[in-house]
Length: 378
Image 1 (cartoon, rainbow, N blue to C red):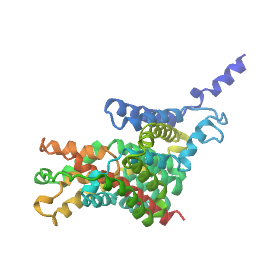
Image 2 (spheres, rainbow, N blue to C red):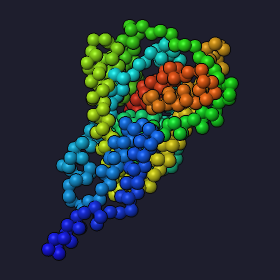
Image 3 (spheres, rainbow, N blue to C red):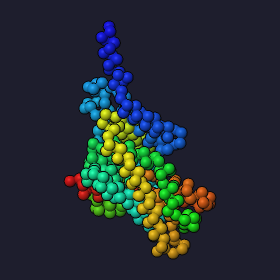
Image 4 (tube, rainbow, N blue to C red):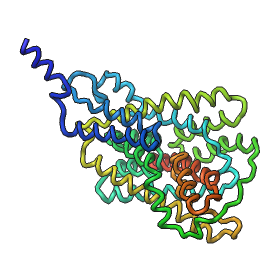
């Protein structure tokens, strides 16, 4: 009986726990706290935070319950992350939920979304200088696009061993956009610039909305064919929404499907932070570079608008506070533009304008991922 009890105790989590497990469990609880207490991207942080708890329950080696053990339930669910299946499905749902009207009505805002991708290439250069390989640097750099699915898709191709840290970093900073971006925005703008009022967006016809995903796919996919899985699904989802004849498919893609995939991707990405494989110096470096890339992306978007305004007539100037929205965190970054703007003029509504560069950032991050994959994936 005594031997049986000792054997049972040896298989419990209490007998196999390490300080690393406890540290990651605290991180998971912190994510859940941020989601519930401050409502920081709860749809992402709750499943990710709980996934961290699941992934860091200590177990005896060989019990076949861990996410990295072949044949386990978690391992099968993680297959969609490892093989890049979940991210395109997320993009399908994003396309079905996104209204590109603000971007279509003011095409200049597309360039703001492109400028914000500076964070990706800035982080790439810094990562190279810190000793990461070119492929690892590219995978880390995509965090600057503020797009979790894109980060997972690219890292699964370029640096699969670092995918957990990259995904957690990307989703963490997406949730912390309301904390990271405002100080940078205020530092780079003057009070006069923050008060700029933009022209109301022009009405966009239904024909324009239908043509946009078709033309957008042809232009971007011809430019970067390696980004086709993301771009194709994004524009398909949008065409389902705007065509007017596939409402049921659009509702499914933007509702039940994206919700299911979000749960699976959040849980498995969180569980991939198993302390025995996750807590490394490289992982900690990824979090540092992720923060840097977000700051650079915000800097790039805001400064680009300031420079662009030098060439625009007074009535056509763009409020630099929407420059931050060029990152792909939809609609969190656009809401940050609005929240910062109304602190200086409560009647100046920037949200509708900020959605232009915000959705452009979704396209831009997918294109940037395609570029990096094309150059580094071979």
